[in-house]
Amino acid sequence: MARYIFVTGGVVSSLGKGLASASLAYLLKSRGYKVRIRKMDPYLNVDPGTMSPFQHGEVFVTDDGAETDLDLGHYERFTNISSKKSDNITTGRIYSDIILKERKGSYLGKTVQVIPHVTDRIKEFIKKDITDEDFVICEIGGTVGDIESLPFLEAIRQFSNDNGKNKTLFIHLTLVPYMKASDEIKTKPTQHSVKELRSLGIQPDIVICRSERSIPLDQRKKISLFCNVPIDNVIETVDVKTIYEAPISFSKERLDKQVLKHFKINNKNKANLRPWRKITDTILKTQTEINIAIIGKYVNLKDAYKSLDEALTHGGLYNNVKVKLIRIESDNIISNKIKNKLKNVSGILIPGGFGKRGTEGKIAAIKYARLNKIPFLGICFGMQMAMIEFARNVLKINNAGSSELNKNCYPVVGLINEWNKNGKIIKGTDKNLGGTMRLGLYKANLLKNTKIRNIYKNQSIQERHRHRYEVNINLKHKFEKKGLIFSGISPDNKLPEIIELKDHPWFIGVQFHPEFKSRPLSPHPLFSSFIKAAKIYK
Ligand code: GLN
Image (cartoon, rainbow, N blue to C red; front, side, top):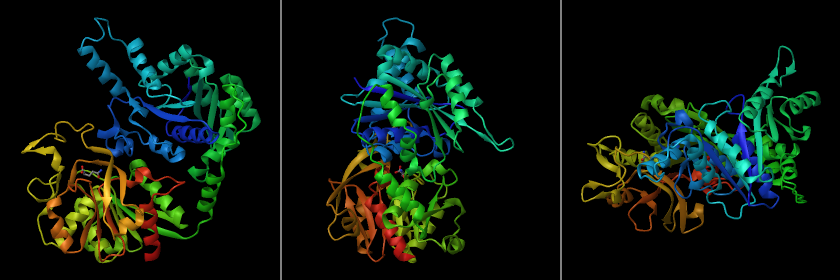
């Protein structure tokens, strides 16, 4: 049976539980184990797919088409293990499954209750789809003390009881604040948080203390004493200079060693930290900087484009440049002042998006990139906007638009064709927005002698999608006559996947989200190439 590691958080949110879990997963994987890493989210949405990025940051999409929490992106980037649908669950999903079952009469007249029905369902999730894994790391979203997380905490308590201490391990991540006024490190919040956890029947085996400064031995002893954990299992995590240093820092603190010790495993392999050292080194040493503008609707929230920011950093790493992201709110772009806004940028990127607000600003920025030969990458909505810009300004179709934004426009972009069966819309209607997009991996064939073919060095690719609308294939000929090529297309030749401009140094739009597949240890070729073009432009 696999060994299960549960990661909870206390004191405050955003302590980096995801990063700690992902780093531990890397360390164990690198020691030769098969690892799986998953997330339980206590909110009532069935999945984060319908949530605004302002609420919950980016929605991460897996190969098999699940819309998941952005922490799964961290997991993938650190472990290079592709997550699956079965790796993320929410309270909403659990309740909706249970209620469906109840309506069908599957509970045979019983009263359906949080204990045991909800907790049983959580325990099923924890074990689901696990075969020969050595370790399963389960992160529990939220903070201990939240009402919403109670059923999850109860379920993992039961799980440990059901499966034995030798098969389970509890890690609790807390904050150890530094008080400037008294020049002291405070352990009390950690003590209280662990006390809260113990009142729910969970005794943590390892406490990870997030701190601004290194925690002196005396304080560690105090945490060990009050929290009832061996001193070696009080692990500190001091702020790192770059997140890529996290696996190095956790290894230094012997997190993986203590985990193995708990399970009484004697493993002589060492985790390979060389790639992370190399990356950290490059990041800290690199001087040359280029500015890349990200023009979107959610730029004020840092996590809204998490994978994208990461992918651009990876592209920078590949090219030995620091990528400085200039986040521009698309609403603030006014055509006649655009030059001012974009004067110092070496590349322009329009990310995925939904809805009308800010679209005219995006279209104006695309026109600027096209005319001034600035490297441009349009992702999903960004590509759709690029098509509208070209249709309006080059093909002179004045009312060119997307039927997502305006039902009366000339639809250069419209609802995915295959969903429109003889005038009847079978999918993606306004009535059911949850999980109804074209989601996950789809294949695209790349045209010979195009930039994109040269970038991927492959005749076909598979990328992750998340969209409801598509570029109107019937206009292909019209666009191509004016120099905009459909350089990637679905295998049935119906769905434009990639477009590029012939007489522009680097102008590419993609219907998919390449950012989800970029990894620090293997940057995505599209981002490496985009940053290279930006470096040349500079
Ligand atoms: N709103 C657009 C669509 O649904 C684009 C989605 C996106 O950018 N992910 O097709």
